[in-house]
Length: 376
Image (cartoon, rainbow, N blue to C red):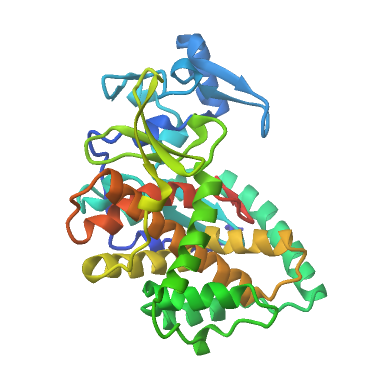
């Protein structure tokens, strides 16, 4: 008897192409887990390059320079074992999320997906799923079990979590969500006890100084959580067009920019006062890019899974639309602040480049956030 076809969504990949673009090498900062068959190869040929880890489970990875820099196989911008690189290196920038279905998402921090050349992303995504169908099927059943428990918890709490309806409501206000006046109203309403009505929500009449101060304060609270890393190497990485690896960290009332090289050596380049990094309303092509990115986020099961994760963390006490509205509004503020951060340290961006660089800086961290379900 043939197996039931996988419930597969490749919508995020449609119309996109990708190519590995020099001199990025952003993926070489990731420490890939090695599959059992890959461990055998590296143990035989490169035993000094294997690292055994026990968290979150027992597994082997490839070593990093000085335990913190680039992959130890990266030399002068080239992978020395490219033909034998691990599965997870080959998979990047694709992420396979499993919840109630299989969805392939695309890491927009990879510069190669912005060039509109190379391989068709849908073709690659489909090949990736087919080549790993057995483990995907097995893990999908585990993820569905988690979702069934989540649905049961929502029913017991009296929460109506209608994903399709929520997504449609957001799509109906997508243009408004590129307006800081609407984001201010969405953020304010999301923390109220009364259920949020996204279709009927009215934007603030104007962006007065008080509104901008509130938005800037909210943005700073979020980015401080992600940029105030105790360990510098846990700080977010931005890879500009020149291929350098920039680490940004908030320290006190200042934000520092550090450069890291292939050897894992880091040096502080410059710093700015946090007060110099100001939110601004996107316009023109930047605003259109933000709208397109919000459409992508709204369609991602991993983002919906993050909202589910928060709903569970809040003990199912908050109205569902408020939680999802809060996720979207804070995502916009985080992204816009990062856009301004990049513009401050790398001035001179043309129209459209400001938002593109912000997404490149932000999306990898967005995909790394906790989510209900699993990535394989």
